[in-house]
Image (cartoon, rainbow, N blue to C red; front, side):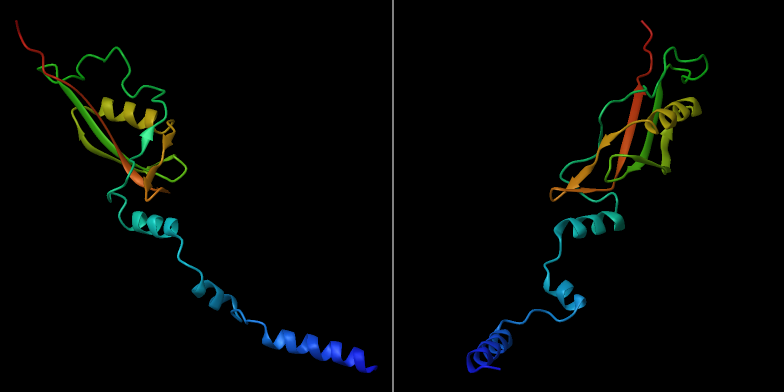
Length: 150
C-alpha cells in the first residue's frame, strides 16, 4: 500500500471515530424522541372519553332522521310530551361505536329504536383535543313539550 493510500484510509478511520455518535439501539432512539402530543391526547381520551375537548363530535348529516313522522299512536305521553336522550362513542374516524350505545332517558322505546337505527348510519366530525382527533361520547337528545289546552 502506498503512503498516500495509507494516509487516506487512516484519515477516514479518524473521521469516523470523531463523528458524533447517535443512539446505539432502537429503544434509545425512542427515548430520545419527543412524545407525540396526539398520542398523549388519544391516551387521555381512551382513559376518559367524557373529558373536556376543544371540539365535540358532531353529525356531518343527520340522514336518516332519528324520529320518523308520523309518530305512532300511544308513543307520546298522555300530555303529548316525549323525550329521548342517548349517547354513543364516536371514534377518531367519525364512526359511531354502536357497542357503546346507551339510553340516558326515553319516554318510549320507539324513540330509542329510531335513534339507534339512525345514528348507526351517521358519519361524524370527530372530537378534537389539542388539535388532535380523539374518541369522545356524543349525546343525542330530542324532546317535544307537553300540549297545553286552550
